[in-house]
Length: 543
Image (cartoon, rainbow, N blue to C red; front, side, top):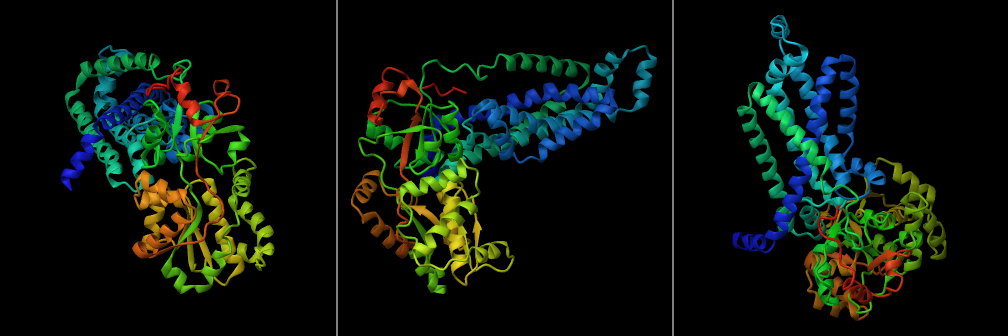
């Protein structure tokens, strides 16, 4: 076990150093920026007490916003990348520094400052020579707290393409790869401990006026560095092509590395983004080429173009429900009901349902209800919308728990199944939505935390059964063979049932903007490879 861990670490040491450097850069730049703003703001609040309450209230309000939500609020204004992550981290670091500066200065004995004033010292001399040195331990405690907070929050920067150790964590979660997850989690924990201990040592060493001047001088140098920071938005390499992929695509055996080899592409760097952000990033010009899913409604809504997979790399990802056999035995009527969904959703219909959520701003529950109102009578199913709503709002014990991953299509499919069960049977179904990647959903299903969830054939074969790319290609090229293989393995090895396919193939697609003139004559993925010979991909440090 130890030798395997060391081998994995050795194989990924370059990526580990790169991501650690990104993590440290994001964390410390935001921390120092917070000190530049927070300490003077704290001094001003003590000098002008009326400002103290509004400043602390504003900083406290930022802290109450969940970190992922804060990133979401900033994205429309700042776009993806390190700029957005840096602003979010700065805001999170501000409160501890501001509050401790106010607390430390307010706690200085008034008799000491009166004595200094009686000796002829002016306000500036009292601040630098008396108040700040005495308040320094409390101020530094705030900096230490902010540093530890930022180490953890920085991991979320990976969701918006800012890099850092969170890249490994989200890859590992998406692909059920514990080694990859630990490659990010363990160094992040070590960095938090090191940051706290180093700042604690600095706190013990810094005393008196010299320490204060040293801190102020350091802050000035950092302020100048921040202004000249090479990662400010706008310094991207002209003419370069920027790629964006999900963490799961980067880690899967049938993903990024295999794709490069299959098409004989040169080595390229890419931003790793949350699946929900890829389309917006492409639409806003933050990336130029991105991986998407063929049934996503935003492809048409954003006028994106799919490059033809001319060398047939991407296998089929037929959607179906994965259900615990124990649940089907306990509720025999459930199997019959779920089987009726087989073949009900082709690519065109699924894309239209997804678009209703992503572009028309309807809730997944509304879209699922609209679908069932048309579909159920056509299939001879007595579905009662009112009864489905009543059960959804009921707090009574549920018989069935349906899980979903964290993207639109899964939310819609989860609602369709949930409302179908609630409106057409005596069972009571509930939802656990947004569970993350394949690993989280599959493990929840194995443990019995959920009874079923929508899954894709290629994903199960690659991420759960760990089928090699060659084996995956062989299984998915023959119609029905992958489904037969999954039914046998899921039942025999895990006690799960792979139901009849729902009818659509949500395979990966490589997307470009329809109005991007660089890709006007690019029709296939092979054409893209030829273009890369003349126009280089963007460098890894592209913000």
